[in-house]
Length: 110
Image 1 (cartoon, rainbow, N blue to C red):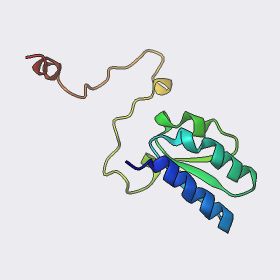
Image 2: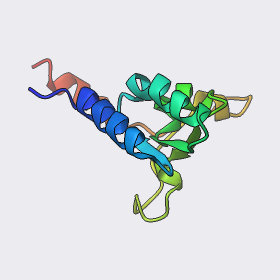
Image 3: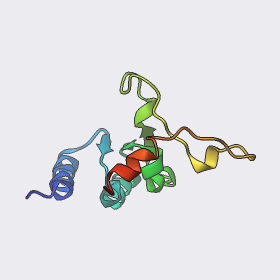
């Protein structure tokens, strides 16, 4: 099987050697791209990570990388995603809508 991250890193290195105006990377496992992207950004080329903020704290915390949340891009999703961040809960807590009925958990045990 192909290692997509290795292939993407090789492609990024190739494009960087040819001269980049900017770079956007979207990956479910963006951690592999942190150092190469920060190196590119340190050299003055804008580097942006695209993903979900819940899974890209490393990019959000970076001083050199830009971050775009997928849900903030117009037209990507037809309706808002059911995202609840623990950092955005009110002080008194909240009642959250279940993703599925409890009976769904029992059916797998039959």
